[in-house]
Amino acid sequence: MRIFNAIRPLKKDEKIPYKLLLLADPSKELIDQYLAVSTLYIAEEAGVVYGVYVLTPIDSNIAEIKNISVDESHQGKGIGTLLLRHAEDTAREKGYKTLIIGTGNSSIGQLYLYQKMGFEICGIKKDFFIINYKKPLWENHIQCKHMILLSKTL
Ligand SMILES: CC(C)(COP(=O)(O)OP(=O)(O)OC[C@H]1O[C@@H](n2cnc3c(N)ncnc32)[C@H](O)[C@@H]1OP(=O)(O)O)[C@@H](O)C(=O)NCCC(=O)NCCS
Image (cartoon, rainbow, N blue to C red; front, side, top):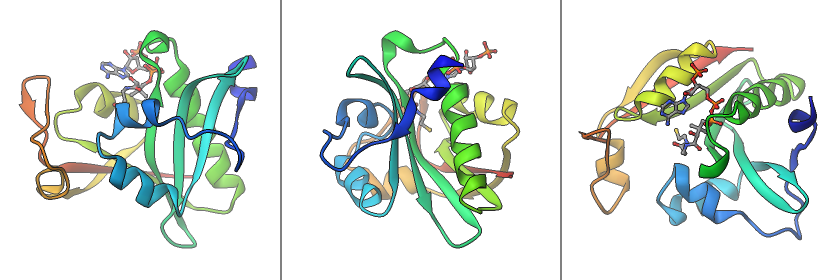
């Protein structure tokens, strides 16, 4: 599995791929906050980064995928699925028992993908996107207001 093997942590001296991170999360301020306490993994080929995910420790048992993103020209080819599998393997290897991921109430495709991958809805952060983002967010003709939390036992 060539792509899977191309996923690796970003090195300290490498450029942070903000363009990709901002596809999943429009707040650079929030991205910088969680990057400070997380590991950023990239899928890269010939110097071009086309996928990312951010793994954040919550406590000794729980890790969270704070951001997952695939370059628009590469979406729909199974890379997001591979990044999720990689995140699961990485979190399990690091000793975490549960992996969580949050997404907006309007992110229908993402809710489909995460549940298809075995994540189950475990909570909701009411008004998260209204409180934490300056501008209203809309997707699929639905206002993105709440964060839906999903978890998977590793
Ligand atoms: C979400 C994302 C990472 C998925 O990556 P991907 O490489 O496109 O995902 P895959 O190709 O592995 O797709 C797996 C399945 O999920 C579906 N899917 C994934 N994202 C979808 C979306 N945004 N809308 C509709 N369907 C989607 C695919 O159609 C596919 O369905 P299938 O298996 O029945 O064919 C990617 O769409 C993306 O970067 N989106 C923008 C950033 C974002 O929203 N990140 C998540 C924030 S919570």
